[in-house]
Image (cartoon, rainbow, N blue to C red; front, side):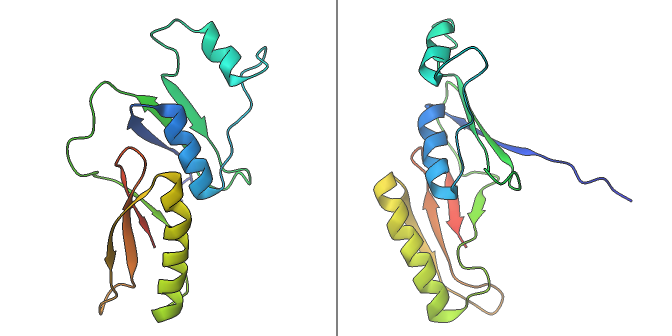
Length: 144
């Protein structure tokens, strides 16, 4: 019998806190409290060496069900298509026009946050419709 393990999803990015806060809005995640002994994240960051300041950030599902998301600063930008992406499940169980309406409503909510719509992939014999998008640093994700 296999053991179920918890996991986190790690994003390489230029601005960890900015990207983390974007994903908090997308998923309803929360930023954890600052480390013990610090009143705020700003206090914590100002205590770090300048080279380490803002080099990582995280957010988590307040229900504890979803994976923790971790964002780490890397010097290089994204140069090729993601090998892994998140599917944000907003149309589960819906089909046809009802599904498209749910996807379009979520897309409309995310655009003002800085998300970019890439394309609508319409349903075929094997798959339901989804919308391909990018987050604020160009990482692909789908509204599914």
